[in-house]
Amino acid sequence: MAFIEGSRYIPLYGRDSTVVEVKDFEMDIYPVSNSQYLEFVKKFPKWQKSKVIRLFADKSYLANWETDFKLKDSEKSNSPITYVSWFAAKAYCECQGKRLPTVDEWEYVAMADQTTKDARVKETYNQQILAWYEATRSNENNIGQTPKNVWGVYDLHGLVWEWTLDFNSVLISGESRKDTDKDNNLFCGSASVNTTDLMNYAAFMRYAIRGSLKAKYSMKNLGFRCVKDIKIESKEESK
Image (cartoon, rainbow, N blue to C red; front, top):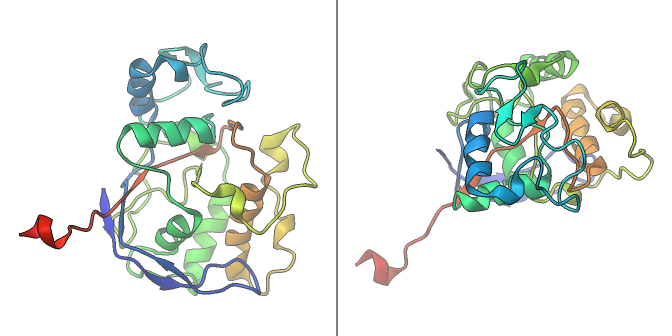
């Protein structure tokens, strides 16, 4: 995991953005892979493809797996796990003694490039992200092929979208979107119509997607990674 030094920053929620504070925490350097998730379902059978309760995962859950313990031939063990619901991602992290990142934590780390903690004003940074949004089948790539950012974290951009703990707390509503054809309908840019500059566009794309999700959704471009709180030792513990 990478240590993330907290700070105060302004998320790109739009014109009504306010400063938020992020405390120190640790974040997984890589998103969770297919092979790691396979070990998880072996230990916890209730999250296997054939046994998961539909209340916690829709019918697309692990759609790219052939059986409970075998990927389809087209899939790679070191590609990011996708087709997992929020419930499943949350359970995985908790079983590791971790948790899903909050939206503010994820955005805080994701606004960094290779040299700068807040690279959002850089044209090249935004161009790279938008180019990925136009790319196809990036979810099939191996983990760790994109450059690591200044925190030492890989693949926040360029591979898959990622679940956050409070994904449904975002300010953009998905009420107008239909449940059918989720993979196509959720990845539109209509939520960015109120942005004031190009820098906001990529962020509004993410908030539009999050606002459209339901916790049981499982999609081909949606994975996750875990974070961990920094334990602050008490005076008695430090003696």
